[in-house]
Length: 161
Image 1 (tube, one colour):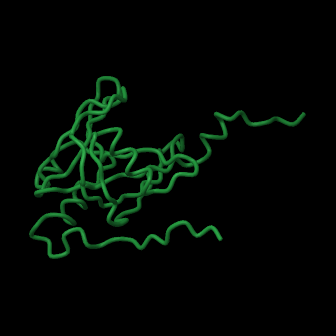
Image 2 (cartoon, helix red, strand yellow; image 1 turned 90 degrees about the vertical axis):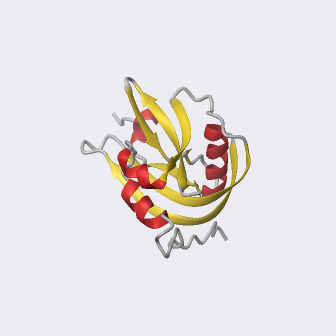
């Protein structure tokens, strides 16, 4: 007898792709606070890439949904992944640098959201941030850094021919 995988089981075997937005203004970074049970922690605004959606479209959509702000993506800056020790979750994180171009700061209505704020970059290592990339963000974006967010990855776009 051949067993077929249920859709839920199959989905657990595919990494989740998350687009995270790094938006820095006046040496402060935009973060959203998530609530999971009794825990609260900060994350970069962003979320799961939907099928057929570009990374840029995902970043714009997610930031608007979570913070009410509108952005222009400037460049891709980091790539990381998070794999649970028991292999129950695998998340590929794509980080983009973006400029805020409009909207009004307000907390989105997703149940997981507990807050939204601009946190001074010099304090980013003092907050609980997931994934724990506060140090690399601080080093990359503080004003005294001559590169100041200029490093990055070259994204080649949708190459479907």
